[in-house]
Length: 491
Ligand code: ZN
Picture 1 (cartoon, protein in one colour):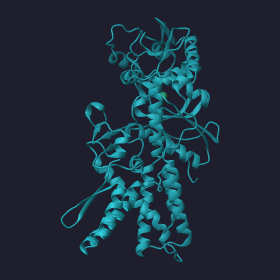
Picture 2 (cartoon, rainbow, N blue to C red):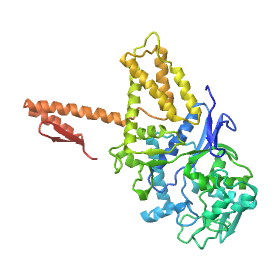
Picture 3 (cartoon, helix red, strand yellow):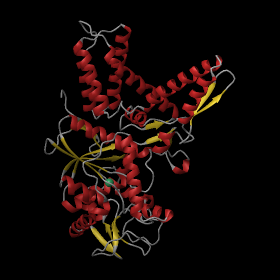
Picture 4 (cartoon, rainbow, N blue to C red):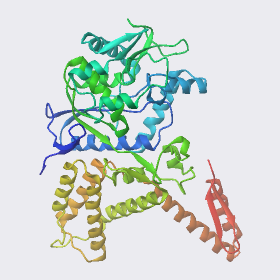
């Protein structure tokens, strides 16, 4: 590597050189999904962002332990400390066991992540499988005087914590502001202060997911699982904690408070957060009618989409923006990304068609260094992509006879795409459905034109044969005056 990796640390608000605690080992913890609904666009961005980090560190020869959790208990509606558990609510509406909901949506999540070519994490712990660890953590926090119990529920005492430590250091929130901004609407609030948060909740009679504890029969608070599971698998202090920016407050702020309250020190060395996705300039939300699931994106069945998009188009589109920038989705932007990605793949396939010259007008190793520098500069994937497009231009130039590649540069060029586009950015070229569709439609057109010619020379036997065979393959053909139309029969 020609330069050192710098990443933007949310807590110091600046780019810092990344120096692992115990090289070559690197520990990463990323907050995964709460599995109560179909995976959507909002799930794709953090998964892809931290997948690139995982891939790049592995490419750089680090031994990475990547932990990404599944939240299957304790995440209540509106991210609040009161109300119904998101998973239990879904289970009630669908008349299922909560764990059936968890299984179904975890499977769906894994399925869609695989389509986006997101690597599996090294460990994928579930909150419900770590209740004992969470109870132990509460006991530590209690012992150190930062928790209080009311009616069988345990709350984190933010005020007591603030006397000794800095609550708000990640999000930049100030306790006095929180005090005036978070007046509780619920008159029955058990908390001493509205900004306190639940570590353990006593289960209401209708609550299904419940465990016996010394405080009550209940369940852990949402923030607790990540403090417990990250340190269980990565140690008391570990390298990187990631997630979406929407998790900075309260989730990650509370995680820091819990870990510091329990262990007396911070557990995370670098905090990384990806920015949010908007759709046509608007926040994505169910009430706004612009909520897009990954299935809808891949099938095109949504009012804002004119067609189905290949998962690789989505991945490419997400990586065209820096992970700390907002990213606006629109049908037009996706069409442009699809075109760009196709152009890149076409050039990649054309590398084999370049005739080697004695000398070279290009220097691929220079571009390789630029790609490394870009990734080392806080994972600047847009710059990597623009470097690759510079190469696309020269490949096309070489095919047109305006640029020259010697043998070495041809090999280096192929390796450049293999390393950066495919291995590190995680794009794939084998499963390019867009290309396959293009070939399919050209072959069908070819056959139907043959059939047209057969009809014109009154060879109805041949014309019928082509028609019947295509129909049996699931292609619907409609004859027009002088031509034809066709489409794939819906499965
Ligand atoms: Zn978390």
